[in-house]
Image (cartoon, rainbow, N blue to C red; front, side):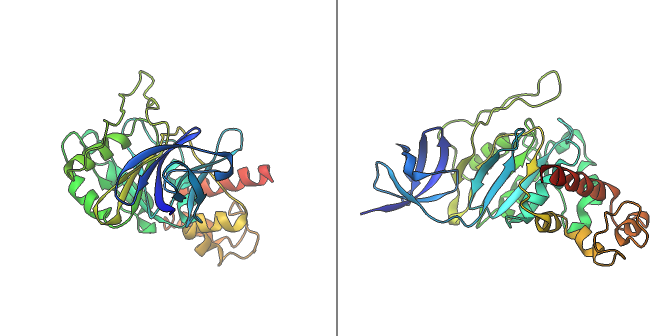
Length: 292
């Protein structure tokens, strides 16, 4: 009799499966099972995967060669983790937001290592507060914000995304231990290199179950992020603040550059819309057109 299971991690031609009793076991993948990622629901006979169930959503990016890479599936909330070290790459948050809005899933902001920069979360609020996003300051070192983070993550699957070195694995390790649900083996973490860039210690997304059908997903760190954009509508969904203003532009195909009657440009000039949001939109629009 086939049983249902969750893909806890994809490991090349093998996968770790979490069954409905909470037991973890490893299976060899066969070609007919297709592309499997962390978070997928599957049917299994205990030794092999029989089929993958339809995905509710999947977090996808493009790699440096333009190839489509699926990070995880079945995501409810995406926590974008930034920290004072390494400093956030330009437009990284905006690019993640495009992918999140297109899942769709709930975006959240985390400012980790807040003890190094007490004002960092407030600066993020000024940049993204108009979207209803307010950064939660957290610190594994001091224990700041961990209870609030655990409470906000209840009842859903939560993935941490961001640059290498921002402390995603350390956060999940601390959260699991506080919940009395320590991982089977210590999560691999590393300090920043001399260049200030984090070293890649998480190599594949991994699912850690929580009580009440919740979960944390640890994901590999990135240096930059290119969201999957199938069409112009995907870009519009990724920038709801700009899309709302753009409806008031004089020209329907307004590039929000120097066109007369541009409502987006007027909102930026009036400090109602952060200029960086427009610049992020323009950069992604140009990239999308080059690919087309």
